[in-house]
Amino acid sequence: MTGRTEPTSRAAQIVGIVLTVLFGVPFALFAWMALSSRFGWSDGDMHGYVLIFGSLFAIGLAIPLTLTVPLIFPRGRRVTAGIVCSAAFLVVAVGLFAALLTA
Image 1 (cartoon, one colour):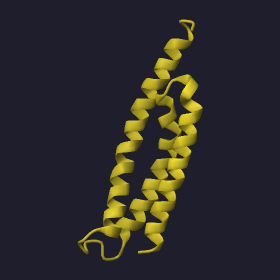
Image 2 (cartoon, rainbow, N blue to C red; image 1 turned 120 degrees about the vertical axis):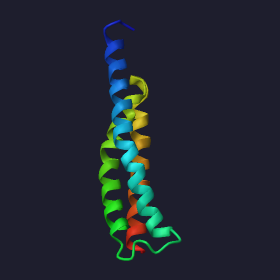
Image 3 (tube, rainbow, N blue to C red; image 1 turned 30 degrees about the horizontal axis):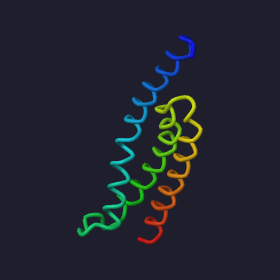
Image 4 (cartoon, rainbow, N blue to C red; image 1 turned 90 degrees about the vertical axis):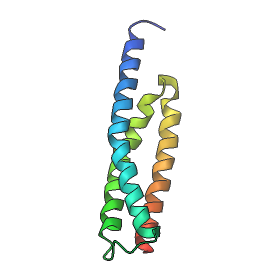
């Protein structure tokens, strides 16, 4: 490994961590709000706006999150991480969409 490629990879990992936190925290918040609106015990969301907009915002934030999480991993594992993140994105998007449609 040359010294020139190592700092670039390390800088990409730091940027990946920052962007993952930046997109991941609001994603988790919106997904939790949408799912708690759908499966929660209270009737605080009588019209379903939290479910609708929470699902849309969560899916919207999941897209850049899927693209930034692989940057955290070393260069040789980014393709595998990208495949796993894409599969997880599909599962989350289908789950949120199903929760939205079955409400």
